[in-house]
Amino acid sequence: MISATELQEVFHSEIPITKYMGLTVRHLSADAITVCAPLAPNMNHKSTAFGGSIYSVTVLTGWGLLYSLLSDETRDAHIVIFESNILFHLPVKEDFCAVCRIPETRAVERFLRVFRKKGRAKIKLLVQIITDDGIAVSFQGTYVAHI
Amino acid sequence: MISATELQEVFHSEIPITKYMGLTVRHLSADAITVCAPLAPNMNHKSTAFGGSIYSVTVLTGWGLLYSLLSDETRDAHIVIFESNILFHLPVKEDFCAVCRIPETRAVERFLRVFRKKGRAKIKLLVQIITDDGIAVSFQGTYVAHI
Image 1 (cartoon, each protein chain N blue to C red):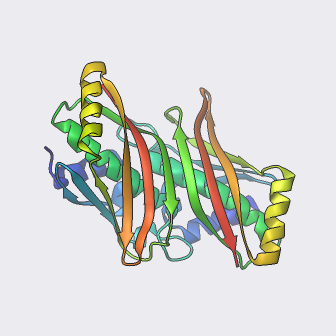
Image 2: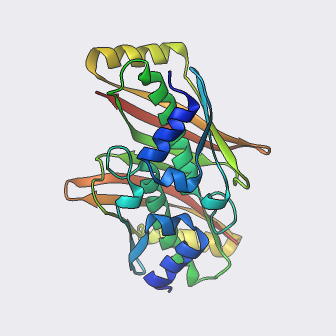
Image 3: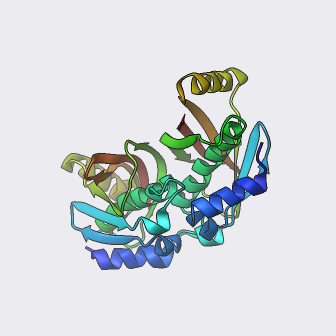
């Protein structure tokens, strides 16, 4: 398994805008990930977090968890976002973190089984930004992993 | 009505990351808008456009068209994205532009009528990125405008 620091290095070196955004990987384990960003470089006209930056953080949070999961299988997997839905429940008024937990065991097992067999599989992940006021953002993304 | 240059200035001054992204408003008229970005600052690990940057450009394309539409009504309107869905059909391999056309007349009339009466209204917009290979990205966003 890769470490949070290694994943952050992947983001910064391969997707340059994440460096500008100040994106950090705060936590990474086999079943969960937390990715954070400061408000300042990601601010909008209302002094809250810009929806585009919020989307970037959430889509990478799910991507990072899959990258970590597949890093035990192969280093040759490509992971891309195929479709996603994002709901902005509340404005994000400060530095923020997005959290993604691995879905139920059966979904992951199916994903890995199909990936090993066909070299291509998809999986749906839920990513959330939770603030002191409650769930601020819910992101649901369908990712495709392929060799 | 505001000009493309004025809208671009709004983006750059109020959402700093758009300057880093190299975002430009190429065209703005009463019924359509085109917003573009170069590939280089928005690149991902596969040397195609990063999904987060694509989302940022599409969400601002719809936002810009609404901002322009409402600038004839009032300068006090707040426009926020509430919910959106984005489909990545094809990778974006070069500088790209997102296009949004005003929806059918009746939907806009209803939106403006509700906004004038209640000071709050919502509208759904479709934004697309079209490349030489066809439609690469389809974004559908529900925006809320309020006083």
